[in-house]
Length: 221
Image (cartoon, rainbow, N blue to C red; front, top):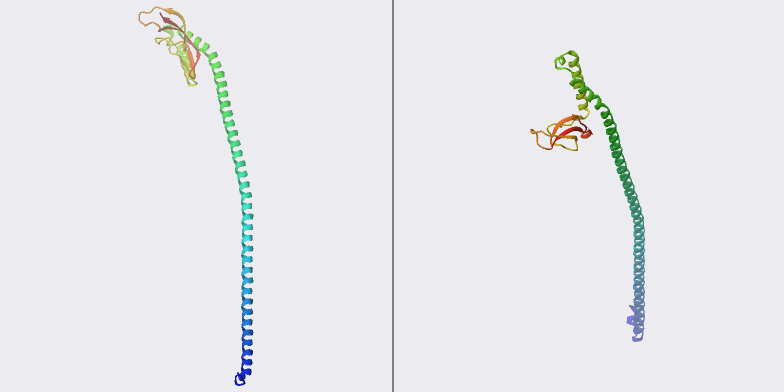
C-alpha cells in the first residue's frame, strides 16, 4: 500500500486502517458464517418439522388403516357367525326332515303291513277250505280233469301267496315252539320224543317273518 512510505505515524495509521479493514472483513465473514449456520439450522428445523409431520401423518394413516381393518374384521366375524348360524339351522332342519321322512316311511310300512296282514288273515280260511275240499276227493277220482284243475288252482294260489311273503309254518316232527305253535292237546307217541309236534290240526302261516296265524297242533307228552 502507498501509506507504507509515509512517516511512522502515518504508517501506524495506515496499519490501523488495515487492521480496521481486517476486522471488518473478519466481522463480515463471521456474520456470513453465522447467517449460513442460521440458514442451515433453519433448514434443519424445517427438515425436522417435515419429518415429524410426515411421521405424524404416517402414524395417523396407520391408525386410520388399523381402524378400517378393525371394522372390516368385525364385519367379517359377524358375517362368519351369521353364516355358521344359518348353516346350523339348515342342518337341523335337514335332520328333522330326514327323521320325519323315516318316521313317515316306517309308519306307512307299518300301516301297509297291518293292512296286508289283515287281508292274508281273511284269505287263509279260503285256503283251509280249499285243502279240505281236495282231501275229500276219492283216490279213484284224483285223475279226473276236475280234480286236476282244482289241484292246479290250489298250487297257483299258494305260489302267489308265497310270492308276497306268505309261507306255511313247519310243524309235524318239529320241536314245539310257542312262538309258532298252539298246542291244543297232548298225545303219546313212541316214535317221537317228548315235546315234539305229532299232528297238525290247523296249518299256521307267517307274513314277512310275522306270525299271521299259529299252527294248531298236538304235542307228544
